[in-house]
Image 1 (cartoon, rainbow, N blue to C red):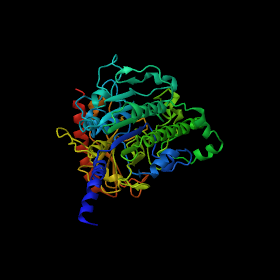
Image 2: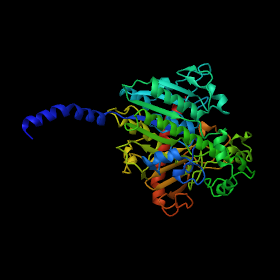
Image 3: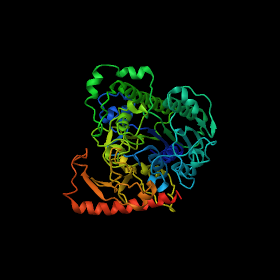
Image 4: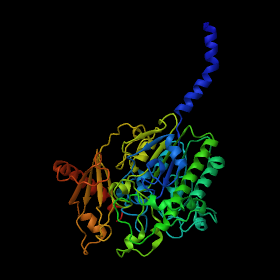
Length: 497
């Protein structure tokens, strides 16, 4: 090739080379899809022998399936706060769920705000549960105040079925009647936004937070009928429920509703992925599918303890797989959840990662895909854990810790916190609360005093307490746990003043 021809070739090829570089260096679109109360063992790709989830299973084959993925809390509001802020929810005042005394303060910095500053268009769809969206009830910051340009959601769940979808609020205003089930409504509306309403010159961040499979549930018959077969009775008997006793009352008639709801959720997620494909957005979009906490327990168990009277949760047949505990429990089943990520060309397809990824890692991990700087005026507990998607080591400044402020002996008698350090998990119990102390005073003045220790590399089901065999490990982890407990608790309690 002559020098003249070489220059001519470069002249014509350079624009295409530059275009490819620009595409490669461009910031990816980002979608976080959050299921509600979906257990670690509820999907086919996580070993469920009953529930059919072909779309999520296919999605897992196109990316990485994480086996050590965790929500930032053991119940809904705390885990959502952790996901958006990168901070342990106790720092933000979420000791339990959004309600009279707790909402996400405007001073918190969310991943939506960070990405919007980096040129992203941001949208939120579904269950918010971090403040009241009904302005006539309370004036609290909503999605629009927390960095979302476009949002459609509900404060809590659209209870009861498709007829209650009319409770959706769009950008602060009641939307009016919307027909359909919750997951179908938000996926279809989000798909319409992708096609017709977003600014196509900008990358986008979408956060979809569905109601399913949180109770009450009533899926279309075409889904529940998939599981209306005598063989399901035999299969259900093989399912594990986190070593949590099931009700003595026979509630097996309800299982098809739960199984059908998970299949309905799978269909909705598959429809969203097809929308991305049809719009040519698959290649440059990072999609993460996960859950806000472990699976819910039936209500009759608590009813037998004198705590509940509403039987809607007797449809709960979610499973944490081999893990111990369910929703609310600081044991693994309360916060280890499905976690699947797909980013074609970046995350190898069909891979599995056993590297820990926690709910408060979302903010630093997603921000790390941009030139954004993390806030320096407050503790950020998460870390950029993108390496976990690649099965590589993630270095952390401190151990990961989860809390649940239960204090009633009659309510399962569960511990209040757990902390993970490498393969060891330390379980901590606060001393029993006396009647003379309210919850806030009890938390503010008590430290963990009773401990259990488990080696998850050998005992994933947390059956064998080895605290007596490793006293030096217990002492070291107890000191760190107590320090983190005091620091995070005190910051959160200061926000309730």
